[in-house]
Length: 535
Image (tube, rainbow, N blue to C red; front, side, top):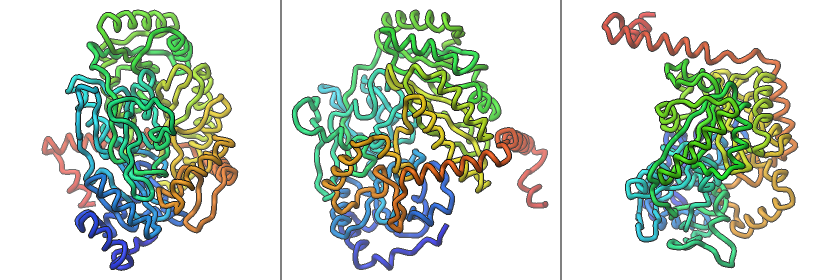
């Protein structure tokens, strides 16, 4: 990665001074070390990416209020400097990483408070830097249920998931990220603060729906600062159920039958045998030997028990074995920790693919064939979006110390998207920096109107530029969908020619040896650190 430029002198007397005067010097950071921390999200990026994009921000600000955000954006608009909002960055497509440097707005730094729980109107209002778990737990303690949230709820921030209009836990019954929002307080590209809806009632009226416009915009139209969610009464009973099937594709028929019944689960999810094998290799005992199908019911006790009986009948009819309530509860408790395999010491990169429900089994086998052809290790997990849509979250495992494999493995995501299209679906729930050029073919003629909206609201193109609407390097060179596809296909070809991945077994062995060293050390037999120093 290129040397981190010291921007404190470059901006001294201009932008930095203005920002310090506006929101306080303690909330404006220009040191090399701090800026470098914000140059990636959950996915490790090869250092070569810094050649094409300026991933290291010039300035990091940590606002404490909506007014602070407005002041920052006004200064950026006056100076023509890019502004990139960032939450927990628990995503892997560089959506919250700067493409061209500029100002990065850390929403977690000082905007992570629950502002109000309105029991009369059944709403909760929180700042955008709050985690979803924080808001869910506060609502639950007050006697309410927040309908849906991302599987990464313990870390993911409100604005991050809303900005991708994400799919997650509770989606099947209560809808996606945008379906539970009453109102948002946002800062537009000119620094004006706007309420997108109505705090105490639904936005069912004529006029363009600003909440829906900002939802899924990936921070390219406004910075989300506060969110008001509608809530429902806390259920009398929330019951997870677990069923084991011989293989993941066998879940196709019971899943299809449940979605065509009147049963309305809160959530449905699945994990394949590979996933549980990886967990065993890091010392976990999931008590599942095949593929697991998780169905979570909630509501009045009598209704839950009636629906459970129906789901039992459907799964048994198609060869499913019902597991104990303890196993089901364990899988439900683990819903936010799908990628524990990283504890072995490998990296894992997930992707999101959606296909029609009736193609569940075919898509499953197509993904396994892709992994085999690319000599990759991986597993398939996923969740139900709605009656007609399933979301697969396959992940692959690789050793990030191998640059060649790290770079070429990225093509797995793109080729997975091709499979989704072939099965009547689409790639990704979001686009970010790396797949922005694929929005145009995905949206067709509607894409031009999206660009027109962006140009009208953000004529200086300062709001998270280089994301969602297209891919462009720091030198102004556009990367078309065709160019991206050619490059990804070439990398996939190279990956197929490389030796097969053997990361998990090797890393698991190293993990076991380290655990043994720790155990021996705890018994005062040997100090592994001293042994290494002697060598």
